[in-house]
Structures are given as C-alpha cells and as structure tokens.
Image 1 (cartoon, one colour):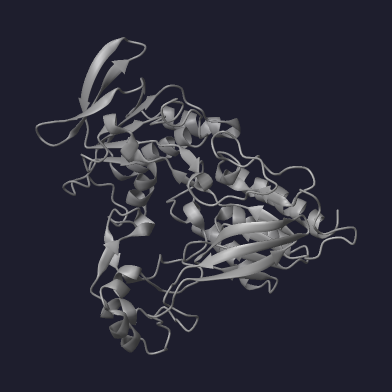
Image 2 (image 1 turned 180 degrees about the vertical axis):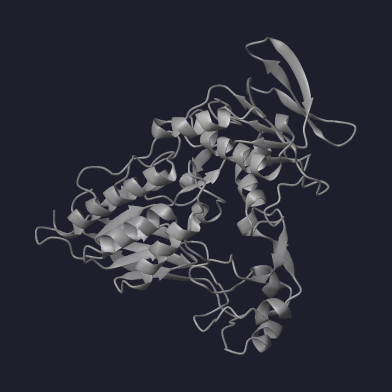
Length: 428
C-alpha cells in the first residue's frame, strides 16, 4: 500500500498504541517523551495487562507493582498521553502517515466522577467470576478491577445491568458516577503511525483433555498458579487445593502442556520453564515439607537466567523428572494422579498429587481478535512479524504480539517499536 501521507509528509503526528499491557505502556511513554501526542487504547478497564496479574517476576522474585506504578506516574505527568480504556480497534484504513482507525468503546457504566469509594459494590447483589483471578473466585458485579488499578475507577459488569440493578446502583453513588444506560459506541481516530501491542493469552487448558483440567479442580494452569500465590488472589496468597482448601504440599509442575506439540502449539513460549521454576520457589517458601516434581522435556533457561535454574535445581525437595506425562487420572480420594513414563529410567509411574499445574504456552491475543489487515505481516501462528511491518508502512508490532517474550524483552521490543513510529510521524 502506498504512502497516504503523500509528498508533503505525514498528515498526522499522533501515534496510536493498541494494547495497554507492559509493551503498550512502554511504547506510549517512550513515544510521548520524545514530544509526540500518543493515544493508548486498552480493551479492558485498566492498564497493566498480564503483568499486573503476576505475583512476582523471575529471577529476583520481586513484585511487578513497583515498576508498573513508576510507569503510571510517567503517564500521569505527561499531558501528551491520552489513555482510553474499554476500547478496541475494529478497522484500519489509510496508510503510513495518515491512518483512519475505527474504535469500538464498550460501556463501563462508570464515568470519570468515580472516586473508588465502593458504595456501588455495597448496593449490588449480583456476583460474577473474578476476571482478574481468572475466575477462581467471585466478586460483586460492581467492582474495582484490582487494588492498583489504573485508572482507579470501578466497573459495572453487564450482568448487573441485565439483572435490573442499574437504578439501585445509580442511587447508591453519591458522586453521580453511575451510568446504567451507557451504550456501546463507535468513533474514529487519526494517526500517523500505529504500535500494535495486543499481547497474549494462555493456551486453553480445556483443550488438553488428557490432563482433565475441566474435571478436577486440583488441576490448574500456570497463570492461575500466579493468582493462588498472590496476596490479593482468591486464597490471600496461600497455595491451597481448590477442591477442599487444604495446603498443597505435593505438587507437580508439568512443562510444555500443549506446547511443542503439533496438535496444539508447535512452538516454545520461552517463559514457561522459568515460570515453573518460580512456582517451585513459591511452594517451597510456604511449606518447609513440600515436595515439588517438575516434569520436563528439557529445561530452557536462557541467558543469565541459568543461575535461577541452578538455584532451584539444588533444592533437595524439588525433583526434576524427564518425562512428557501422558494423562491424568482421578484417584479414589479425589486427588489427581499423573501418569506417564520416566524417559531416562524407562519406568512407568502413576503419581498422586495435591495439585497439578500445567505450564501452558502463549498464543497471540490477535488469533481470535481483530488484527490489522493493511501493512502487516502475520506468521503461521498469528504473531505479527517482530518490530516491523512491510516496508513503506507505519504499523509496528511490540511485545508478545510479535512472538513469545519475557517482560524485559517485551519492554525492549516496545521501545524499538516506539522509535520506529516516531520516525514515521517525523517524516522519516
């Protein structure tokens, strides 16, 4: 597609960033701090994406909140960044320097007058699965997404409106912030360049039928494990069996659950091994007598993260079992039983556990969502080609929208994409 900006340079010097996770936040801030106006779109009610839901980062096991809050402060202090939540792109037209972007805004039913006082939550009776905790617990249908939400504003779930609680919610708010009649709307934006940072989602554990994820509450996935270990998670940070609330002291961590498998995700998602090493550390911190078995094809701890692997490996109560487990059975006592063959010893095992954690991989959020249909290259798995699109265009991918990356790599990718976008709007 040709340069719609023509010989006179870009018609718009605004940069649009799609996706408000760590990559989108980084790209927006970096571009704005070079002096350009930036619109940051996020389809959910808050920024932060998947990183917000992590309990800790590897390898230092520090919490992600501090880094996110620093970035939020940079956004608050920079008038060039405009944040728009509950918004997603539905169409893109035009070309480099002059894109017209159609955006759909979903109703939040709470306007900018909200002070996060919580009166609406007291007034509502409808409950919904907690999206922040991946549905592991329930919350009121008027809720603050999480304790560090940005923007710090409540959301009224559509279930509350459908249940006829809209007027009661409006009456309960002392600030006039509730809008039960708010409807979905569509509008257009103009941008000279676009950074596509729509991130990832966990591969569906339900598709891994041999592991009985939908049949046993004590079979969970790796992102759910993050929430179990978090202080603001469904168990207040205690790693417990979802079935009965008892301590999970014998735990299996199953690597490559659906990954490197032509029937599911043929590729490696890079972070899963390290995530499971982190989960082993969580469990051992909580329970002195815990036993953790890590079932693996091979352990992939790239670059300097090898030392983190070695630290966990030297824990005598963490056992590494070279095996691709075949299936899970449900024992007579209700415990899940992991079945397979130890590759090295060539021994068949049937091992019961308190908890089995499936290390599922990353797939791009754009697999089933909207993705640009002009000026981008998409690989066979649905990822946009890393940090760039076709020559002569102005749409650039960032973070896991471009392929499996850890947090630090996502930030680097986002900075690169921001600089490419800046070059476009400057006529480069």
